[in-house]
Structures are given as structure tokens and as C-alpha cells.
Image 1 (tube, rainbow, N blue to C red):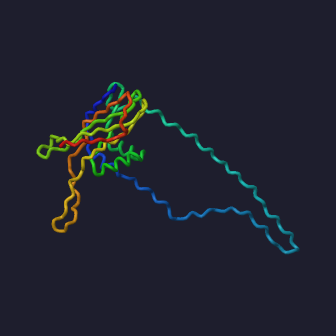
Image 2: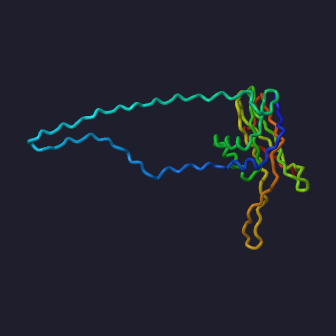
Image 3: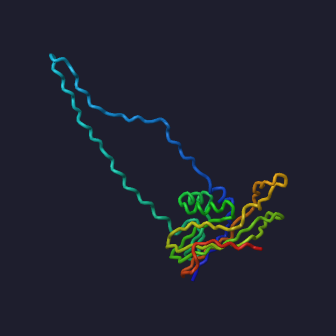
Length: 232
């Protein structure tokens, strides 16, 4: 048994490539050393034998009050059902915005590694969830390019099938859809110098027609995976 959800949206490749490598500069530490202040007791005053010496005044140590660490405030439970998601029969899916995708990458090193693969290949992204346990997920999508003869049309380049393992109820999963469709034209050499010329970007490539399928029975497939089938 399975439940399927079609997301009527397209994720342009530029969404990933433009946000994946943004970084906030880390403030540099101050180079001015801070000298610690050392408190010392007054030394006894030395006088002649005819004048009695004064006893040094002994100051009582000041007890510092140690502030107890504040008890961490637990994060609020996520809103359920999800807001802003496409829903069908208890399953939910959403294509993340550029800001959301950047946040996901910053929070999970695994996603950043996946996005690194998208420097050279066309990729997409989707967030999924369900009211019940999904034994595994199947995400289907297509990779296309703008028709050079008609900007309003798309030329299908290939089909992408992405799988994801078990996901518990009311839990979100962030999935990067990684194809093997190159973002650059094949490298060519300069006819004069013989050196490789700078890569040329293939414009207008996008990942769209995304559908999410929640499977309620187990599979023998190796999960997760990304299988791209180009159109010959």
C-alpha cells in the first residue's frame, strides 16, 4: 500500500547553486590582550625599634555569588498539520525556498555534502512528512531545460527517482534530489594554446514535476538513493 502526493511546482537549479555556498563571516577575536587584575593584601609597615609596628589589616575575603545556570527552555512542538505544505491523505510535501534551504544546509552537515554534488549536476529539494509511519519514501521528478527556440517551452532531459528510509509520524525529512545531468557544457580546448577553456553554463535547467510517495510496506532496495535516467 502506498500514498502519493504530487507537488505542482518546479525548483530551478539556481536555487541550490545560489544559496548553498553563502557564508556569514565569523567575527575575528580582539587582538588586544586583557590584563587580569590581581587583588593583594596590604604589606605590614616596617618601622624603627622605638616605634611599635602597626599590624597589617587583614581583609575578609568577599564571597562571590555564583549565578545558577538557567534551565533550558524546551523548543515548542512543531505545528501540526504542517502549514504551507501540499497535502493529500495524511502526507505532506513542500519545495523549500532559498532561505529555508540555506537553513537546512547550515543545520545538517549531510545535506551540505549532498549540495556539494550539485556544483556540477542539476538538483532539486523537497521537505516531506506524514501523519503515520512511512516505511520508505519514493520521490519522482523530471529534469528539463528551456527550449532555445521557445522560452515558454521545456525540453525533457531525464527522469529522477529518489528514495528515503523510514520516517516516523509527524516528523520532517529534508531531501536533496541529485541528478547526473551536467550543469556545464563539455570542456573544450583552446585551438591556439591547447589549454582547456573556462566551463560554459547550460542555462535554463530545472528539476520539477515532483511527486512524493509514502510506502507502508518494506522494500529490499538499498536506501537512500538517487537514480537518474537520461532521455536519449
